[in-house]
Length: 188
Ligand SMILES: [Zn+2]
Image (cartoon, rainbow, N blue to C red):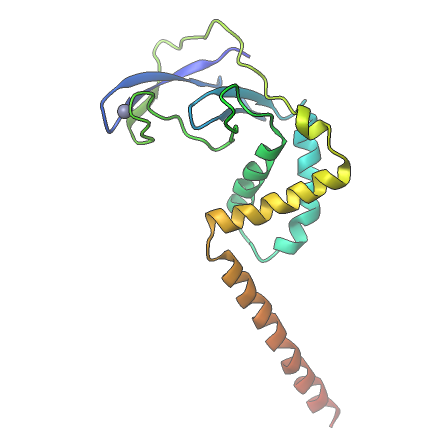
């Protein structure tokens, strides 16, 4: 897959730079980036790890049924997917939701991000994300890794998550005696 480009202008230092983007027909296709803006390509229709982690993630969903928010679930899934990816040449991890960053001052803030006009097609194919380490794991290890990654997401992105979860469990406990009182009240 050869990339097209966005032209970004950094809000902090004013530097203008290009970063890869996908073409218009890109359903199911993704770009992964590291914090140093190394880019890898993912075609979710042919990527075995994507399917595997989707299934393992779905198995865990009932535990998180109180997260009644599809957008958040997608974010969590994207976070979990990165554990299947081999590191970039720099040794950094690839992330699905990583924004392009200014190569001069490393700011994420842009004044503008627009398609180049006319659209410029890159000359070289983007490297495809690989899963050598993930593929070497047993199914049980993969399952444990997914469970751990989901926990890590909430710990890092939602520091109040554990307190929130504890509160929900406490509230659920309080519901039980309430039901008992009701049923005994009905009997008498
Ligand atoms: Zn900058």
